[in-house]
Image 1 (cartoon, rainbow, N blue to C red):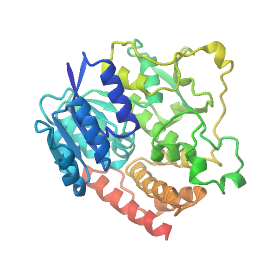
Image 2 (image 1 turned 180 degrees about the horizontal axis):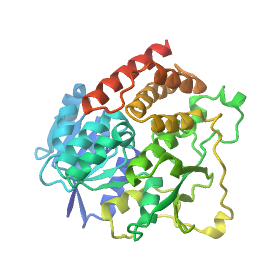
Image 3 (image 1 turned 90 degrees about the horizontal axis):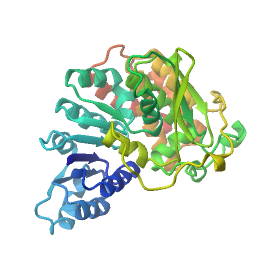
Image 4 (image 1 turned 180 degrees about the vertical axis):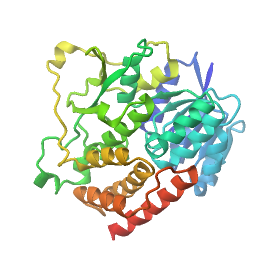
Amino acid sequence: MKQIAILGSTGSIGTQALQVIEEHSDLYEVYCLTANNKVELLAEQAHKFHPAAVVIANEQRYDELKALMQDLPDVKVYAGARALDEIVEAGPIDMVLTAMVGFAGLTPTIHAIKAHKTICLANKETLVVAGELICRLALENRANILPVDSEHSAIFQSLVGEDENPIDKILLTASGGPFRTKTMEEIAHVTKADALRHPTWDMGAKITIDSASMMNKGFEVIEAKWLFGVDARQIQVLVHPQSIVHSAVQFQDGSVKAQLGVPDMRLPIQYAFSFPQRLPLSGERLDLFKAQKLEFFEPDLQKFRCLAMAYEALDRGGNMPCIVNAANEIVNRAFLEDRCGFLQMGDIISETMQRATFIKAPSLDDYMQTDAEARRIATELLK
């Protein structure tokens, strides 16, 4: 029985991971569940899966969670960021699914790596912010990092069995989001309700907005660089509205290997848990006769400038991706709270990139200070 800690169990990835664990309860067991604010759902999950511990990141909600857990005296209840860092180091844990949203996932992932845990990575910001540091720590501590994002899982699956065969190009697919066919004039007036209507994937609000701006795809480009050891020029983004080809790899002989399937995040989650085995998975199967056509388009970098800025951040290196991530978290939240226009998000991120202190070779402390500085700058620009 593999013992799994799920960081962010109440989110989209976390809840689907629990479905996978429930379907294969003979193979996997939940050791720990964590959430930021959703105490009721966290308590409900704990009653169903009986983990050894639960952690609520928001310390102000500890008493509320404790009250909901009083009939489960064997389940330890903790709160706060330090508790998140410490729980992933627990001896019985085999795998840590990092499904927390944003910068908050960085330090728990570092602690899990240093504790030699296998990382099932669904928190892309970890590699976006500190990819070089994370990869070095993983190598030093012999901690495997298995991608959970559907695109990176597809690339990973395409590379299995290829050993040392060089990658010519990574073909990173993107749905294009809800605004793929809209003009700049139309995009200028979209609302959060418009942006939250993703055409193919059911995700949390933050990542859905990032998908609409294509910042999410930009982050995936940065993540792919660190996961697969390629340069930015080797990563090509293809807009693929059908979301059937989840990504592909082109090799030096011209061959292209791709992973296809229906849009179901349980598949990459389960593959990370079971690698190198493939387990049965309930649900819909891909029918290429019904799919009829597979379309691919170049992304419009003028219309979706967030993708262009991610490439720029990757090219500049250092703490620049950390700056972009911090500014994006601020404007994403502001857009969801009707304090920022859709196109204004890109303006503020760009200005933050210009104003924030650039550090070519940042330490972990530098990343922490950069995140705080960039958030302050972006917040001031919102006023």
